[in-house]
Image (cartoon, rainbow, N blue to C red; front, side):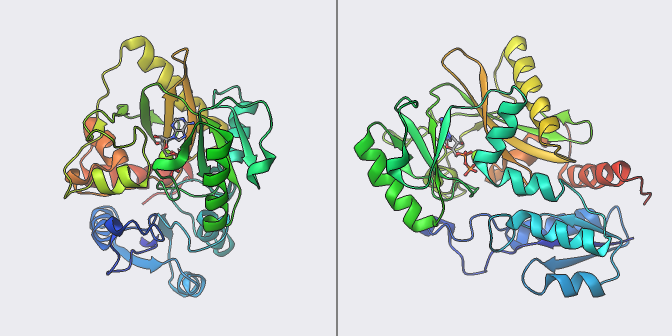
Length: 335
Ligand SMILES: Nc1ncnc2c1ncn2[C@@H]1O[C@H](COP(=O)(O)OP(=O)(O)O)[C@@H](O)[C@H]1O
Ligand SMILES: [Mg+2]
């Protein structure tokens, strides 16, 4: 079997710590080569296909039987769905969620609408094309983020706002910089967890708590760009993740249940990682679904999905193999 590894590679001179978030969602060459190496245990040939404007031709001429897709896409509101759409047009089956799910999960507002329609708790929200659109229903403090980004792009220490004046200043900047509406959500002060799911129906991997207690005083208590990529980096040496999370059986089963229901409601396939916090009543409330979770191999980098998989007993190669074979099984393909 010949497999295309569809991906977007980080430019070699890109420095995350500069605070430039342009390519925050792309994968490092070391991640791509680790996935390729792992896949070669399970299939005869793997070719890396860069998911840029030339991708369609490369896929069309490549004689591929299958694709392992981690492509984030280079532009457009449904950029994560573009490579899967090309693969479907070419009749090449692939790992992970389909076109509709990838388009919805990149749109935080639409994701929340699906959650609400399925009775899954999510923070109260409003989408703001302009700051002055804010209605009377939401209660401060509010949390602001660009509606269609991931990897903490656009989320800064200033995302947490406690007045209309602050909201106006921050939202105006965000709309101008990211050229899209801003999602205003009620701020949840409870514990934060991220949950990986693997397979169909999914195995819920050991829960990861994202805990901000180890960060220096004055650092934000939420996962903004600075916390995710600068404090929690190899050089700075802070680790904001605890896995398995210290939770009692009752809370664990509530989190597992909400995670599984989210996976089903959004028709996720093979893998995802979702973020939630406990609300004032201790109820898990989901605010982000990552259908293409990061797969950084080096344990020192604290990549959350591989970390949860390790806690469940998967080696990195075992994890990649499980994603691959889940996708094959689901589509009735033998190796
Ligand atoms: N409604 C909220 N209440 C509290 N914290 C939030 C809320 N929304 C986001 N955050 C914080 O911001 C971080 C990033 O937000 P998220 O929606 O997960 O965006 P991204 O797609 O960039 O991961 C979260 O991990 C959390 O720490
Ligand atoms: Mg998130």
